Length: 155
Image (tube, rainbow, N blue to C red; front, top):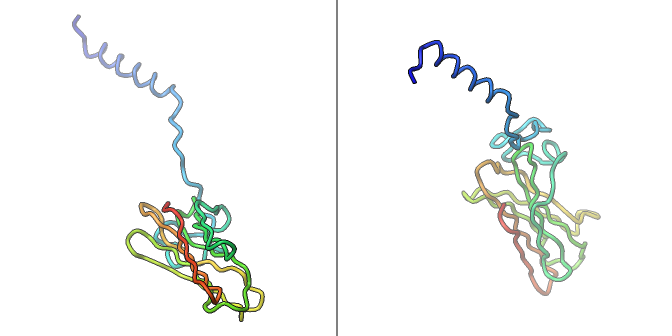
C-alpha cells in the first residue's frame, strides 16, 4: 500500500488525537511550599517558621527505655528534613539532651535542651535540603548514670 502525503498526514493527525484523548498519567506532584522555601533554600531555616504545616514523622527511635524519642521529620512541600527530640525533664541530667539531623553528604544541624530551660522537654533542629539526599536523626540523653543514644533509619 502506497501512502500519499495527505494520507500520511491524516494518519499522524488521527494518532495524535487518540493520544490527546487519553487521560494524562498522574504524577505525584509536590504541593506548593507552604513557607516560602523549597529544597536547598530551606537549608538552615527554622521548620516551625517555614515548613511545619505538612510535616510528619517519617522515622522515630526510642532513646533508652524511658529517656525519650528521636524523630526524623519531613515536609513534602518543602522537601526538607529535620530532627526532633522529646523526653522527660530530668533534673539529674549530666548533659543536655541533644538531637542532630545528618544528611548523607555530612551536612548537620543540632539542638539541645536542658533542665535549666524551665519546662522545656523537646527541641528541633534547623532543616536540611532533602531533595535528592537522604537524612537520618540522631539523639542523645544522659541521665547522670548512663548515656543513651539512638538513631532513626534514613529517609
